[in-house]
Image (cartoon, rainbow, N blue to C red; front, side, top):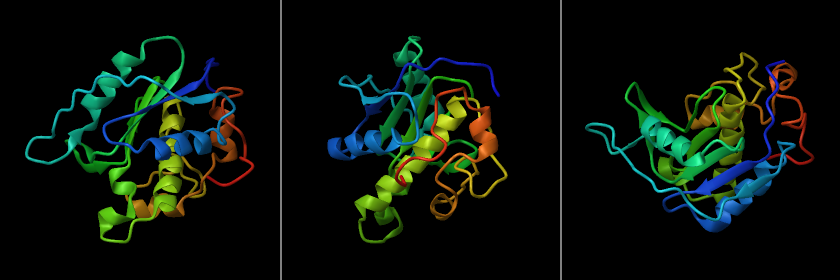
Length: 191
């Protein structure tokens, strides 16, 4: 078990073009995985977007650092949801990013959308992927590393196909490492 950490709630920010209804439904579905209250914040932080040199992608680390500053230090965990393609200089893209034992994560909807790959839009698939990616990044916020268990939500997924194939829940080992009372073993309904 990791060191105890009290998390009063998970607060979500709908950033830069994210559909309000999708953001609300994301919060509802992510709340099925976690035992702490989840809420969509009314106010949005001011975004400073920095582009990766020579690429039409937002620098995920710079975005995460800005969100961390805006989050303050009241003990909540925060998730910024954006619809811009994210990357870091050493990777072609990232679906999300979080600092281990931090208090903030960011996820991008862009590459979670089927239409990014030339397929018909499917809001349900986008939402299911977003819930899985958010849960994964929050696992990092709560101190988890990537897991070797392919059925675990903490298994590394370098592409959208692996997000679809990996499990939707924390494995028993990862669940044991989370701070007590943060996550449910198995939600009542699949995300």
